[in-house]
Each structure stands twice: as structure tokens, then as C-alpha cells.
Image (cartoon, rainbow, N blue to C red; front, side):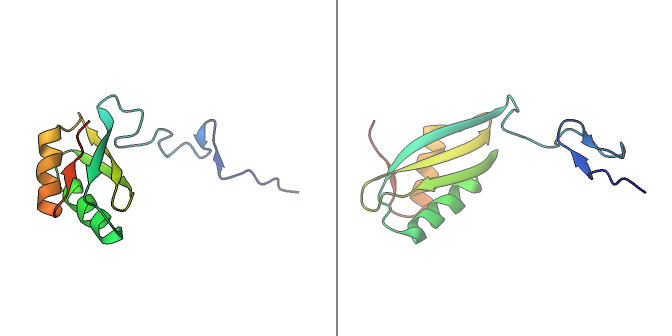
Length: 105
């Protein structure tokens, strides 16, 4: 009787040994990656969140954008980027997206 082994082993990667066991590309463990949260006012719907996401993702080094929408209030926009992003770049992207602004802190 043939015993079948699982295709992958989470502790050591692929059992065949011909594939890399380490993830490739930037990850949350990459020391260059920086996650920042920005308070944003002016968003009222999913379309607003989409416009903001699109503009921020277009910035150099941005890997991910997540919007926690609070319609008509202060929404939280979380940006994951290589080496971080400054408030001025975020403010410019928000302006390009529409009538959105960083909330005073």
C-alpha cells in the first residue's frame, strides 16, 4: 500500500524541495514596510472610499490601502508602503480624489 504525503508542510515548505520555502516580495516582516493610519474627513460612501484608495495606491511605494469608512465623520485610511509616506503626499492624493482632507489631530 502506498502512503500519500501532504503536498505541503507548513513547517518546512514544499516536500519536493524544488520550490522556495520563503515568501518572495515585500511582506509585513520586511523592515522597509511601514503601516500608517490617517484620519480623513469628507468621505460619505463607498465611491468616496474607492476614489481615495485609487489615488493613494498610485503613489510610489504604496503596497496597500484600507479605508474604514465613517460616512460624514472621520474615516481611518491605513496605508502600507515601502519606507513610509508623508502627510503632504497623502493630502495631495486626497485632493486629487475629491473634496477629502486630513482631519486635524
